[in-house]
Image 1: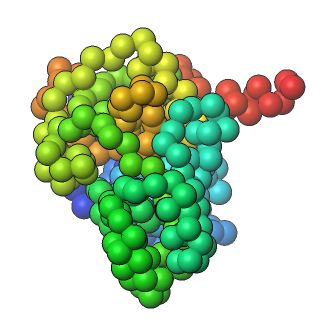
Image 2 (image 1 turned 135 degrees about the vertical axis):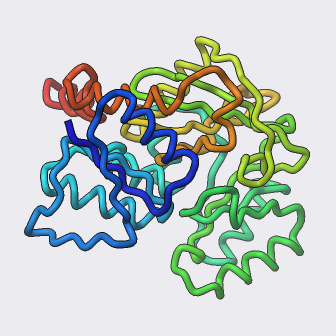
Length: 296
């Protein structure tokens, strides 16, 4: 068995994953995405499966697409990465599956965005369609702030900043939940606790263990399936009235800042799942959905 792992650099997560595969006797090779040159007509890499760990979303997305074009299985598959990498695609996929989410509105001009914000009511959260680690999020508390942020976004140049993704602000406790779903199991969950409304561990949130209840497991597995499945991080908010809401799903799950928090061997779980796919013990993400469609 030969497994490739696409990396931008070797962080703690990648070191732990490499060790987990090596401990299981797997021939694993590092693929540096900064050096990749991929001729779409001439397959140049030969692996049983490729695990994507690129820090750059676009590199990781299109590298996996080309590997799949060559007939190589990938984790996560291109479709899962594409949906998880775009907040609007994630939201609509979750809603189609009946997953509870915060109220979300899309607008295409600063004027219509301001109108939508005032209809929802302050405060709201404005997010970029593509982004991670809690970057470029804005909590907008009043009209003055809304006008300023919308104006700034409209002149930033990137076309995505002219698409305004607006969510209601959820008055959660000083925490959110990050659950790790691998295949059809929620294998680990943590609270990310912070006095700030952004609770990502990348922004200083403190990880502490969270019990995986049957309800949490069902919701997280359903959310993972809605975006294509594989290995994903499901982010949930605790609404005082509606209960758990799925906020986002991460297609390239990070765990370096929280791997020590629980007794779950997350790198080992990932390695076992990838090996199980190659050996046919686990279905490749999306295969079961396609079989269901074919029988309908």
